[in-house]
Amino acid sequence: METGPGNRLASGLRSNEEGSINTSADRIAASYADAIKVLCAVTPKGWYAERGTATAAVTQAGVASLNVAYDTTLEPDLGSLDKLAVEVGRQAEHWSIMVRGEADDEVRDLAARHGLLSRSALPLLACTAGDVVFRAGTTRRESIRQVRAAEAGLYTDTLTRGFEAPEDAFGSLMGGGVLDADPVAGYLAEESGRPVGTGLGLRTHGVLGVFNIAVLPAARGRGVGRAITEAVLRDGIAAGAEAAYLHPSAMGRPLYEAMGFRLVENWTIFQAIMD
Image (cartoon, rainbow, N blue to C red; front, side, top):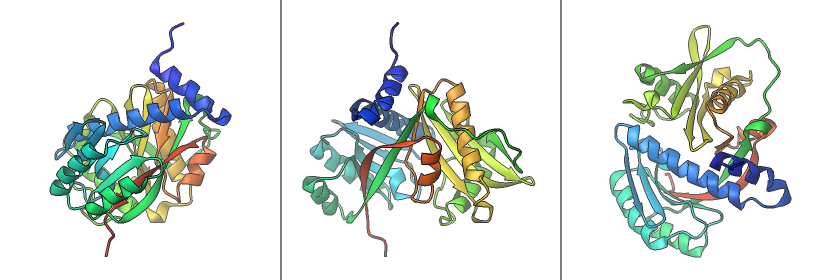
């Protein structure tokens, strides 16, 4: 029987415990790059470019990781990355440079030349569809529903408050037709009819990216984040995703690991030092 891309990814992920992670890491990195390309194509102020193996993605959100010059190969094309970094820096006030793995001295010097002196690790977690740990059925107070573009404002407001970000941090990122785009699924969690959390699934080539898991401070500690994540995963798997990935926050990582996600590799992101 012919093995499709999703099955090769799943096989690669299952072999992680045996020490063979390159196939899964490469395929997930490619899926991430595809997801960012899709987002830039549908978000109102998006811009995207490729040069060599490097990529530039600008959304005009006030979040550095959403305006980025990056290379998802293990040996980044530094010349191309440098040129695209110039372009991203011209277009966005808050921006970043990102590479897979631990950045070497050449990458660090490149980032420093662009004034990006803050370096941090960005864990990449992944899980096959068959290894996701869903909770047994329970009755919950909040409902999770998928939202469309008509509710982009409500979604963005909830996302902003959930991440405790400045009021206009996400700008028009989720505006336009983003929430109506075919590979995108946005979710709101509600309690007593009021939104308390968000989630986003972005499926490319049989792999699901899990983004925007954010819960309002007053609603935390009650399982809302897990409920949203499960909804994103259930729908993505039902639509054909055979694996999923995410970049967790330090606070959210234990939850995702309890759900079956495992570390594939660490990436490195450079940003300007904030005053």
